[in-house]
Amino acid sequence: MRGSSHLAIGLITGVAVGGLVAGVPFSPAGIALAGFSALAPDLDHPSSRLSKRLSFSQNYVRFAFALVALGLAGYTHYMLPLGSSDRRMGFTAALAFGLIGVAMQGGSARKLALMFTGICTGLAGLYFGFLWLSLLGTFVALAPYTSHRTWTHTIWATALWTYIGYLANNTLGWHGVAHFAGAGYASHLVADSLTKAGVKWFMPLSDYSFKIPLIRTGSTAGNLLEVGICVGYAAVVLVLIVAGLHF
Image (cartoon, rainbow, N blue to C red; front, side, top):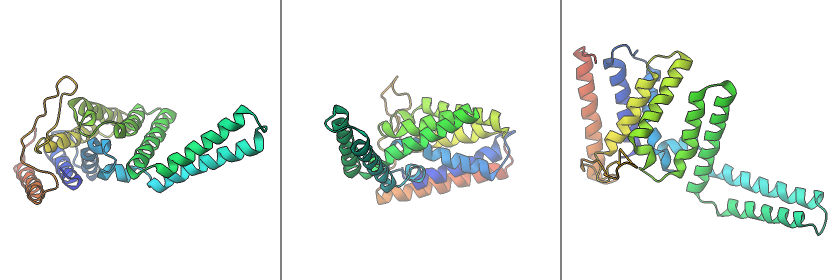
């Protein structure tokens, strides 16, 4: 399913959580969190909507590799003695960094940028003593290096994301974080289960792909069906809220 559809379904899910779950306050921030969470499973794909937003431009990553290569070359030339093995190693390392930067494609550059973003987030969590922020950073750093629709598209990843929300709830004192985060994340898996590829919810315990093969992602019919699902889902949520139901 397309990223825009996942975002829409996540936002609608946020409205449902705020409007239907007893004790959870209805808030724009919570709805936005559900939308963000609905995009999180696709961090395993470097071209996904959220991956592009969280990562730096690939040109900055290449520039960083070129800068490291120049720094190593300069240090080796001016600081290491002629003829030494360290000098040869220094120039070899500089050449390697330069070649990697030149050869790096958009996807691999974005993966490195996401890893850097995640590491910085994790370190910030350690510095401020926020375990939830460190876990979030770890998730962002590792997700791009998993195969698409594998580890991030499981019930275990959903539980981890919900637990991160629970820890954030305790730290920030914002009741409902776990509800918005967990429901938004789960909405992604449910939506992808409506595609022909399906989702392996219980991997690695089971490789069975749960699916109701309604949608062929990217096709005209599939795109129209996604719009119809979003509209229908929004209508059901609105009716339930107007009816004053709570769960």
